[in-house]
Length: 124
Image 1: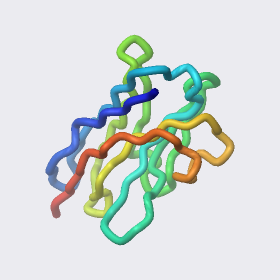
Image 2 (image 1 turned 135 degrees about the vertical axis):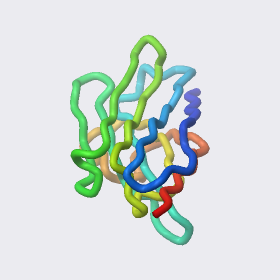
Image 3 (image 1 turned 30 degrees about the vertical axis):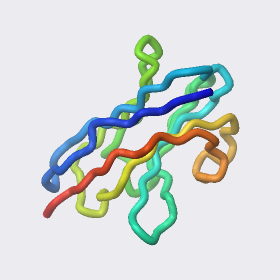
Image 4 (image 1 turned 90 degrees about the vertical axis):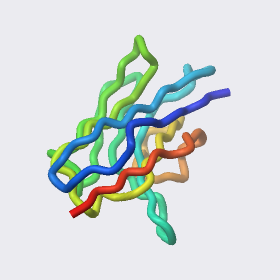
């Protein structure tokens, strides 16, 4: 059993910053990739950023590269998403996902654990 709990979302003005956290618990040894996705009503879940939990790698959607940073704290068992220079199009509910396959990291389909999501609203 794996549990993921996101936090840190909220309302922020365009150009501002937020840091999202994803606290993990349970049997996490089988997880090889962690990722952040965002979703808006009526749309599919969109890949934002991810990292490998064994072999070190990071991946970013083109729309956030250079603005967002994904990282992990092994002591706290927490994954972070540092979001800078936020834009209105970054608005959405952000979900933390955990999976055991890294080849298709950008596909929401391969993540078998999800948190409940934390909403982010960027105002103009």
